[in-house]
Each structure stands twice: as structure tokens, then as C-alpha cells.
Image: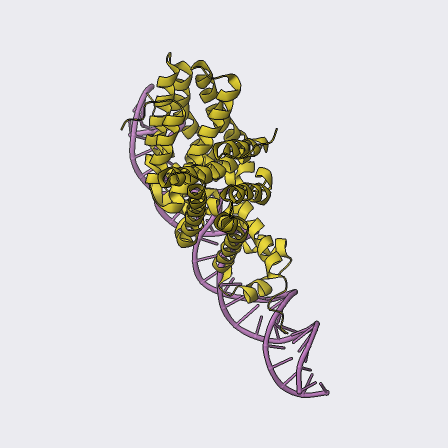
Length: 189
Length: 189
DNA sequence: TCGACATTGTACCGGTCGGTACAATGAGTC
DNA sequence: GACTCATTGTACCGACCGGTACAATGTCGA
């Protein structure tokens, strides 16, 4: 049995954190090396394509996590409301209640958007589409469902921006609570 | 009569565009020089504090524009609904219907947040506060007004992110139309 | 023990980074 | 013309950038 790579998931998670905090340009190989404990030799061994391949792998890794923990439940839940509830819980957990920022959203804002345009469009497109499907199955008209899905994903992204700008985690949890109400889910308290 | 500076407003607008497209780290002095037609000599003459002073001046410039064209109408309009309508129109025009991104929102996401934390918090804080005031004057309870204001500003930021990710300007105009409805303004058509 | 190969540290490359120094201009005033 | 002072171009700095080369390790199975 051959080891493919030593904990590639963990490695990608560490690199993701560097891109998340510093952006694509700001994430230098020195910072990545420091965060992972790997030298350039190792980094270029695992990612021969260099920084760009690292970023691509990180985006794909995040995309995979959302596919498993957000999109799939939205698509496969027999009760669409349960899938939506699952999405909100997973979102809250992933973004650590606003402590974390959306790397893919951050990439979408500056010039790195052009470099990763396909992956970025795909990620957000699938999020909106799957949420719209779930909303349509739960009784909304297709038009309503599509608008509400777009509104919801935008609200999450905007809340992350605002929470970080205000340095106030409550901004994000308030946004999630409003979304629960808006999407017709029990809100608790 | 002494010229303070040759069209400082225009200069700041050019520099702003570079920061907007490339982020703080990505905006090199070479790019700024290219965009403005000024060499380092001139740039450091106008901004002795270098890149950081340029960014601070750009943020202050944007802040001033919003103060004049968004916050003041929200605060001073005798008809609060007219002020809110003014805000949405100015927002649509400023962000060029989604073609442009919010520089201050982009700065809020990465590590440059720490460097400009005060200015960033102040900008968003005043936006939310003034909008909440206008909403309260137009009949909402203080609690409702505050939540709705936060939701609105977040929706704008999120729509900018999504519009750029999808490379689809309609995302932004749809978001503004939803906001008009949500804020109780006539929507047209 | 040996060879095959994955993994790593280190030195190095050309280029660019933000920033500084300074002499040369330019324009206006007296 | 002479003085002032804003403005500019250019050369240069040390530091760091992403990336490459490669020899030295480790770690297997045979």
C-alpha cells in the first residue's frame, strides 16, 4: 500500500487559511510554508504548478466540502425544508459564525477572479441552483424560488463582509436568523 | 491663489480603480503609476506616506462621496422614503449597476482589514446607522429599522460579490429591485 | 542489502516589490 | 534675471517575490 500524500486534506486546509486571510496576491510562498511547516521543495513536490495550482486545489477542496455538506443535502433531502435547514447549519459552522470569510467570495472581488473564473462561477452557480430547486420543491414558484435563492446566497456573502468590517460576530448570526424566517424555517426563541 | 493639487479628485479616482481591481497587495506602485501617468517621484510627492497613505486617501475619498450622496440624503431628507430612494439610485450609479466592486468591502475581507479597520468600520457603521434612522422615521420600530438597515447593506455587498462571481450584471439589478420592494418603495413596471 | 522513488532542505535565479535620494525641470513672483 | 517652491524622471536600495535545480535524505518492497 502506497501513501498518496500525507494528509492532503489537512494540508489543503492549512493553505486555504493563508489564502483566506491574505488573498491570492498576499499569500506568499513564505507564508504558506510557515503555515504548513513545509519548505518550497515539498510544496513544489505536491503542487508542481506552484501557487496557482495550490489555489485551484484549495478552491476545489472547498467546493467539494460544500458539495458534500450543502449541495447534496439540498438536492437529496426528501424534505426540502430539512435540506435548507441543513444548509444554514452547515454554513454557520463552516464560516465559524462569521469568524471566517468566504475565500471564493474574496477571490471573486479582485483580479484573481479572472484567473479562477470558471471555478468561482461554478461554485456560486451550483449553490444558487440547488437552493432554488429545494425552494421550488417546497412550494415556491420557480421564479420566486430562483429570486429567493439568489437573495439568500447574497445575504450570506454580504453578512460575512459586514461582520468582518464591523468586527462583530452578531452581524452574521442575525443575518442567519433573518434568513431562517425568510425561508419559512422554525427560528427558535 | 495657489493650486493645492492638480485635480486631486481625479487622481484619487484613478488610484481607487487600481485598488478596486487588484486589492491592496495586488496594487503595485508600477500599476498605480501606469494608471495615473505619474512616476514614483510624483506619487511620493503627493503621498509621502507611500502606498498606505494612498489607500487611506482613497478610502476617505470614497467615504466622502458616500457622505455627500448617500448618508446626507438619508439624514436630511424631510421625506425619509425619498432619502432611501436616493440612496438606492446613488448606489446603483456608483457601482455602475454591478460592474464595479466595493473597494472598502474588498478591503474588509483580507488582512488589509487590520490596517484600515477604523475607516472600514466607520464607513459601514455610518451607512447602517443612517439608513436605520431613516427607516425609523418612516414608521419602523427602532428594532425593525436596525435589522432592515443591516440586511439592506449586506444585501448590496453580497449582490456585488455574486454579480462579479457570475459575471452577470442582472444579479445586481435584481437585488436592487428586491430591496426597493422590501423597503416599501415604488418599484416601477 | 539493494534499488526505486517519495520527500525534503538549500542554494540560487531573474524580476519586482515599496521606498529613498536627488538632480533636473517647471512655473510663478519679485 | 533671480529666487522660491512645486513637480518630475531616474537611478538606486535591500528585501522579497515565485520558481528552479539538485543533492541529500527517508521509506518502502524485493
